[in-house]
Image (cartoon, rainbow, N blue to C red; front, top):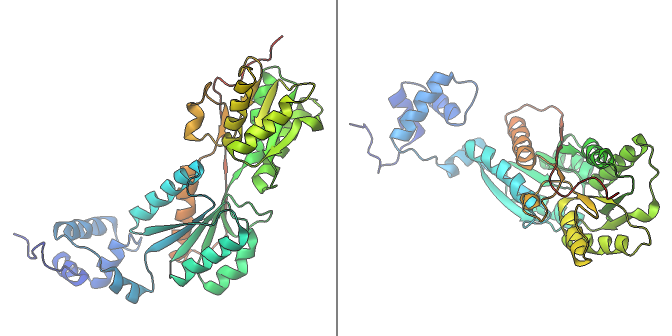
Length: 341
């Protein structure tokens, strides 16, 4: 029979007594500290579970000056990229007994900084910012607040001490190289008119692939949307109004490509028979379009995991630079094919 009833309040002190270890050892084990032997930590967790232990977060916060919370700043909560990225954040946070708070800054730098300040005032232990428009300007802010800030896909043209970014250049170069390998030489690019870092990098990959193939870029085939469906439709209409049409189009992201796909269908043209189309990101929608979209897969879930792991390492006292880059993966689907003879 258990020494403690499940209905009673169970403390760390009670678990320590049952396990025959110190109060500090139990506390470390329940926080997954590497200072506790794995077999000891496992035994302590089993006892805690058997007794129905629930942590007293108020007491822990007062004792440790930690709230076990992480603030996540995003540009649009409805963005499919955000959903996958935050799922990665939550997976790591949940495993370490952290709660996640989500806030929208609408891609506005001033709002972004206000949200970060608001999270700090609410005493979150750390902050993750997805697609930051502020970038390295956080260096002095983080130092002043003494709250670690990790950037995911920083859109500001600067480097930052703690960040997880996708290297878009090789992925874009591979996607356009795929079009070239199919036989395309008339390849357009639909970018993002706001000039974010990811657009600059993806356009660079596009230009590099053309140069490697000895193909001159045509300025009239370089148009810009806004990274959303509507921007993709407007940009594709501009291309279809030109006297000479491209045989293939590489898009800044999948949302742009899906918007472009709609316009191509509206003009009674076929993908890929008349125009091949490729995107970037590999949103869950990309495999459900008609035809399914060739794209560069961005490891969104993994990036969220990596950023959260960096944050937890910093909170554990490992204060070293952690600039991390991940690579994209070309996913070839039915939206690309050789050009018509």
